[in-house]
Image (tube, rainbow, N blue to C red; front, side, top):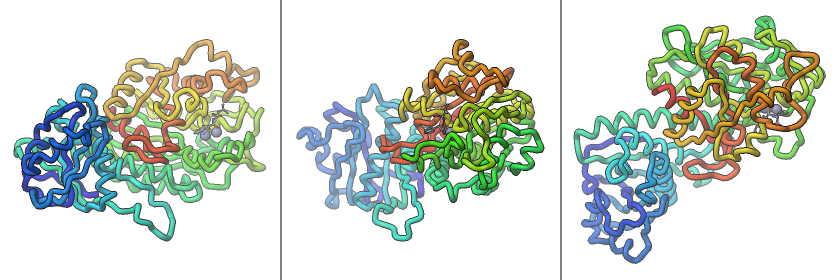
Length: 492
Ligand code: BES
Ligand code: ZN
Ligand code: ZN
């Protein structure tokens, strides 16, 4: 879908479908909806009166224009209650409208910017949210089926119409940001939805190398071992698929911020083998790496003025004759030793070395992103990502960036008491506990030990990276979660 901004009236635009809106409980349309309704001889007003159009969020009503307007059909999309309206509701509304456009096979679709008038949203962000909702909402994973069905109909063009010339520049800025961010989100979704036999560490490296404006290098498993990345090596040595420890640098100066993404391209659990039910879903265990890779692409395209390094420890976690075993004691880049209780707690091992690597580069802030614990799914479901950290200011900043982006984050406490759970008699720390108590925070505390003395935030996206059932503007499958939050935070 190509997005274009035009300085034209809704009465003059020529296309298959024109999208206008209505807030819930409004009995007389206003703004662009009123202008259109006058030409439609009060058709919208009459449908409101008869109760067919209610303005409920995401409700869509199609009206044939019968030659009253240059467009063939008008779609009235509900924006919900006006006091509750926000950027995310704007995303939901436009996504519902685009879904309807797809249904009626409208190739050329025009829309106004929803919510910037009566909705009270700032114009550039409203335009950005509009494009994000349309592009993220219009995503469908293409997969590898050799026969395509009609579900793949795509709206070819989305024209954002604005009659007032001075607003065009501002809208264009919002559209540019929204397009870049949404494309990165959808790229991340492709990586996560992709099967583990294709989306391998080698494939992720190839994708990272394609990001322009970013310098990318990677260590092979043998190089990683030689560098002392022992925790990463220990996870990876049980897999035949070549591992890659990827480093992406953006900005001219010394990196001040590190984004570390868990890149386990398939998590079988290792010797602590996972049960086979839904095991295929463990292809999503590189969602953190995908989010970091695509955030690097977005900030590069947006020209963000910060020095950022992306660190992506990428490997499979497999059972094998050479695999690490429960009871093993393993070193790490930090020098700290780890007692392996479960080889399935591999994410924190690869992240520990990722975090230490970032510290050695001298960064001031570290954000890690990982599908780390099943316990996070039990605690927060698929509606919020877990957030933990050693610096409350940084935690608050990321939560706020999430709010702006429509990605919910919920903080879990890293209590002193939980530290006892991971005390080891034979090493500095156990990689996990068998009690299952406070599983997500225990994961967080493990990482905190490696992040010590650096401001750090941990994002557990185990529940939010993948949806069994679509919701709002997100379809089932990969969500590309945290690309928007991280990009928004780095833009600020
Ligand atoms: N990749 C999993 C976590 C996960 C589970 C992500 C479900 C997405 C959906 C992680 O490596 C893992 O296996 N964690 C263990 C930790 C335990 C051994 C302490 C878990 O959650 O069971
Ligand atoms: Zn695991
Ligand atoms: Zn895992």
